[in-house]
Image (tube, rainbow, N blue to C red):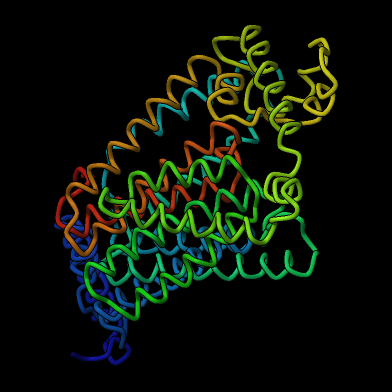
Length: 449
């Protein structure tokens, strides 16, 4: 093929027009995202020495690398997480632009995400502070990993890499947190997070995923991988314990009940008894110190939560249909009368430490109904991914499902749905599950025409 620079001007124009026409025609014939993308880039002189396959490979590799950075940074730092997510989205859009077609597909979650967004828009319109509520709509951006992973993860090897990057980042931050606790810098393990509730929510999901993948590795007899997963899981579990976040422990136990097969419960019981014996020996002369070491001042914390939930019920009754909007609720507490010593502490908190109550107060009954329907759809999609997964992919789908269970159970005493890092982690898990569904040959629903 002659170089385009060696052609006469009229020949260059003709060649460019023919190349453009072939790209457009190929774009209309796209059948599946990856294959169709390559078909949309015939070897044409406009691209010069870079072939269609090489160009496709460059974008796919760039997306894969940025997704690895995103997965690793989920537990490391929110700034790097947001930047890498944004870059990955731009690369995906560039891929679609070159193919001249949207390369995604519809999923069972689309209309339910849309319904919840519509409910939040209604709550914003009728909010007591519409401008502030409108700003908080930006958090819907955190749902994008669901689609990005579903569209961009190409095979099980990439699934393994992304899960490994996430667990590596989580284990490293847990190790960092353990070191700070060991030297007395932190009373509760924080890792790189601002609060123990954040770190507890992260390590709850990371440890459950590690256990799910460990079970899969044992079944597949992958000895080296099992040792790596066991080491990461051990660090994450110790980190989870030292966050001293009871809601995270409850979420972990809820996920574990779905993860562990009945015949393995004896092992769980043995480990629990061994841990209890070790604690009993360590604190044999200091039982009260042992209780305070692991619980802190939990009775006061629980009383504050009860106050917040009562405040939430009072506020919901004032605006039951559309709520107050996506705002901090501190200014709305002032008209609620005091009735116990911890009421003023509760009034300094801008959220209600419960996903359901928070959504009910901020978006009203309309938003709460949409929120519940959305999560029903999420769990149905996760269950479908698990049921349709092959043996090699099943641990990822199971891990995503048990993480979602743990996340929602923890959300009964925390507003983790409003915390950027934990909610991004759970959407990452949902995206992995949808990618499993796609990889194993059962389209989530089908290409978008």
